Image (tube, rainbow, N blue to C red; front, top):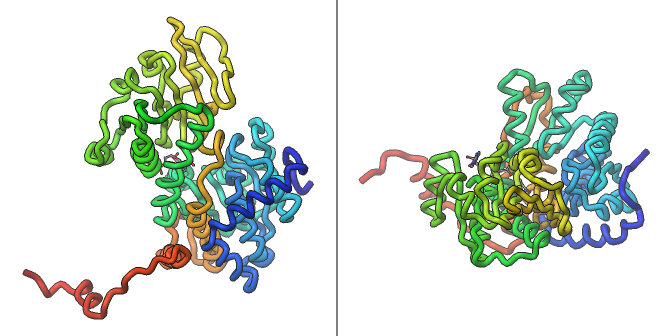
Length: 419
Ligand SMILES: NC(=O)c1ccc[n+]([C@@H]2O[C@H](COP(=O)([O-])OP(=O)(O)OC[C@H]3O[C@@H](n4cnc5c(N)ncnc54)[C@H](O)[C@@H]3O)[C@@H](O)[C@H]2O)c1
């Protein structure tokens, strides 16, 4: 079987949306054109476990242009765009196994299919594919040249495997590249999380008390965009440095225990577990909304919310579930606690994914060229690749920057000249 998708009939809509995204991905297009000519990935079997969006479609088209035989499955049950999956299968000859709303059994069936493709290179967004490879397909893991990881949570899991001596292949931490997290996590998550919240609820952001849980790259982006739309933003953190930064950026910083009775809307962006839990739900106001934009659906303790709720959950709107607590207090959970920007909206805009996926494409080429020299470690993306991508993006934006003069180069490399 070459695909398992919701409906091939959606292909023409998906194709239009993929083409629309292409216009905003000039760096990836430049790479695609070079790949078409030089075929650096000729015959390479690639399995990608990524959010199946228009932008991902353009990444896999680039890999295919380079000669790769690509299979794509979803990295989240609620992030697949069914029309994109259909277009990939019908118009672009990609093996695609992803359905929006697939249950856990189908999700893992698709991951197993991705492994049976016998990939020589894999791509993950959250490390589910690699985790499955390491637990059930050890023999095959040894044959993989390398793997790319797209998100913070995945890199954390893989570094934990490396530390425990369990990692069986080289990893390129695409998430940790500046060309990824400075833009995708900050501007992409910042904008698309608000987009997801608005599409799910249609609330007015202005005047709301919005509690941002976690002030990392994603939290910073979301907090500043929510403020831009007129929200009163409160930040909670566990890292003292990030908390000082949030305070000096002008946000109110407090504990979740204090914030829980003030917030109108809570958004978790930590990569951590149960940052919103029973004691917080108990303090929340009637009508409070809770959502998550971190990778897994464990940031909000949903089982505890269910337990506290007198009645069973009531779906009041697409992506909005109402839980009624003692005293008839209502709490609204958005997008089942999964990444709200991908569940209820379309994920990051193409322009920012241009940088992330250019990094993925060049990291793949790098692995193919260098895998013999790589060990079973988590590696950063080489600086040369990052600089090439940033330069190409500037060129596409028609922005020029200065160059160091020979005098400046000499000065910056010296120590003799002082006061
Ligand atoms: N929604 C998306 O499309 C998208 C995009 C990129 C990354 N992500 C995911 O978002 C999450 C955050 O990513 P990031 O790059 O911002 O990570 P990060 O490491 O830069 O930031 C996470 C922050 O959360 C803080 N934190 C941890 N536990 C906390 C707690 N109990 N209370 C308050 N703060 C806490 C940490 O101190 C840190 O500052 C990860 O799961 C990542 O995979 C999602």
